[in-house]
Length: 380
Image 1 (cartoon, rainbow, N blue to C red):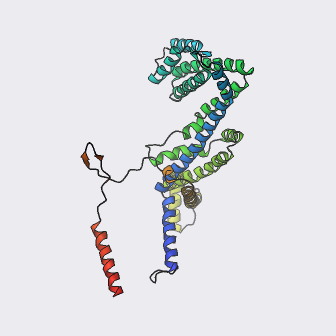
Image 2: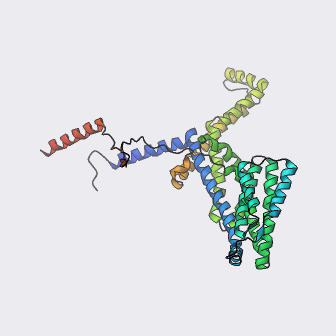
Image 3: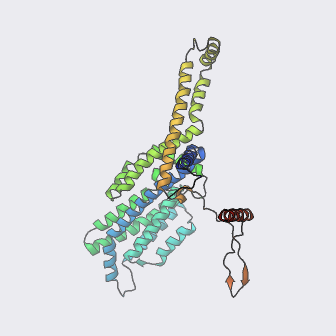
């Protein structure tokens, strides 16, 4: 392919280099660091949700054979195999002890088991999972009474499921595996995993930084081991790499906010008796006779500047890699707005018409006409 006379490969390389430099500076800026923080946060959340769903799917598959056998036994019988009386009694007793007022969603769940004295194994499993999530929500909002009520119903339904599975298979092992996997999935909502699974939707991009600071120093080895047990080796490796990336981005964020230089300034102000005379002597003697802590303060300032530059450069590299690995929507906390459109309405029987064609830009049309005229003159 022959290049136009006005363009050389060096000009293209030069322009590409300038574009790369602009992108690098953006990734090292406060805005770029926070935007990349959103992308990293969402990628961590994706891995944790994948892990949580894998735990639940594995647990559900363990009792699927029992569910199928339960259905076969109850075919053409308008009844269930698990009584809900115990769950209703335990929940009622917990309400009486705590004087708890049920939330609307909780009332709906308990009304279901009150109005259905017997459930199939599958119905009991679904009801128990929903009640367990209600207990989890109550615990996360600090509502001990609500958690106690829903946990009582959850536990009693579990006992009914356990007895039915033992009746069908002669062992409780499928239920125990199912129960263990679901308990592990619920526990992910506690601690750092629960913090990272909170949605950033509607938040400012800065909201990712405090969470990433906590995640960077968290011990996630148990979660990684769970992932490996389920065969999620890529997710386990990804968490480890994400912690390194989180340190890089949060260190750079502290740097652009002047956190390290503030530390030197605070040290200076905490030692005024030693520092201020040192400044005077340094100014008068051209750097001679500096008492403690002036050499240390100056060294600290120099080292802080060096670290800040290093942190920003590392964050820039992390950001560019994240942008190449993740889709653009993962870097947003708000829904992208569409361009303005107009619609005309003709007749109720005809409905809406297609969107109107965008208007022609007069300046673009004028430039195109001038270009066409210039090309015509060349051909003459």
